Length: 205
Ligand code: ADP
Image (cartoon, rainbow, N blue to C red; front, side):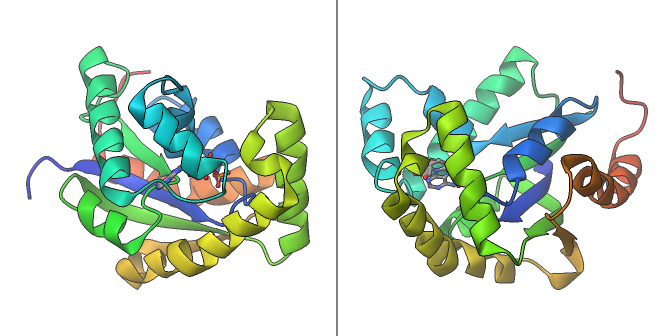
């Protein structure tokens, strides 16, 4: 399968810090951060897709798979056309996709996964607390209600956690999400920098 997007997958439970780490990485030349939830939130809420997104996300549920992959592929293509994402020089950091086994299968023809970073946190309460704080700070309806947070966790455990098994264990690395963002970042860079050096030479800042 030629010309698949070279990708690193950020994987972890809600509140593990995927978004924080992805955003920091995305600031570094040669990385492009794509957060599926962020792109969904930018869709016009009056459009058909915007309405569907609201319907599912407000309940803490996942948007149906085919629709999600189509939205993802179309947006990434648009960013490529605009020159924001340059597949020849940028390592794609995927955050929040794939989240189901079917998404993992559907996305396969588009991406070449080089690494799966599993952000792990043993303290479930700490992650839930992080979601509550973010809800206040970012005005996020999906995390404002404890029942919805609970639902998002259940969905993660039932649908998303099994996605790890889709990838060869040699691609998966565990990184502890406990500690400061800088500490977590330094762990992630230990794995990601060699991948960037191996696959991309002479990228421009
Ligand atoms: P999280 O805080 O869990 O990282 P996101 O910001 O990534 O949440 O996503 C917000 C909402 O967008 C999800 O609750 C879900 O409804 C929808 N969503 C995001 N990514 C996906 C995906 N890969 N598949 C289906 N739905 C998604």
